[in-house]
Image 1 (cartoon, rainbow, N blue to C red):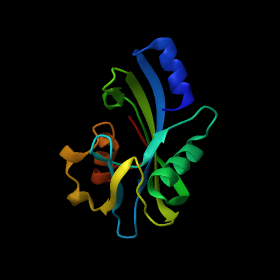
Image 2: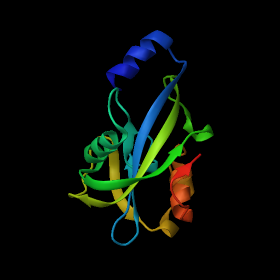
Image 3: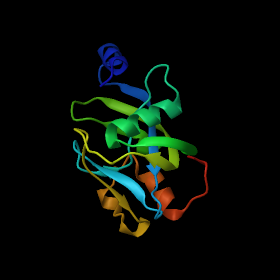
Image 4: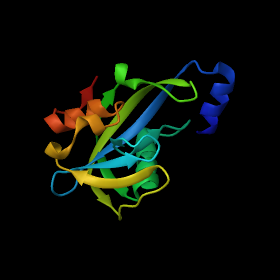
Length: 156
C-alpha cells in the first residue's frame, strides 16, 4: 500500500476511496495476451497497478509492467478507460475502493518474463484459451473486450 492510501485510510477509515489504476494488455507476435496469476487471490489478470501522486498514466503503467513482469514497454496505445460496477472492491480488512482503470495496449516490449511476490505465474494466451471464471472480476470487462476484438479506444 502506498503512502497516499495509508494517509487517506487514517482519515476516512474503511469508507470508499477513489483510486486510478493503470494496466496493460500486452500482446506477443502470435496475437496472444499476457496474463498473470496473482499471488494474493489466485485469479488471472493483466499487469498493472495504482497511479501514484504526480505520476503520468504512461509512466505508471510502464513502472507496474516492469515491476510485475520484468518487461519494458517500448510503445503503447490507449485501449480504454473503464469505470462502473466492476470498479468497486471490498478488501478482507473492510477497506472499500472504487477504481477507474486506464488500460493501454502494446505489442512493443523487450525483456524476459519474470515473476515476483505479486504473481505466481505469467503466460500468453489465445482468446479461446481464456476461462472467464478464472479472471480477476475487476479486470474482466477489458479482457472480455479484448477477446471480442472491440474497437479502441473503449470508454465505459
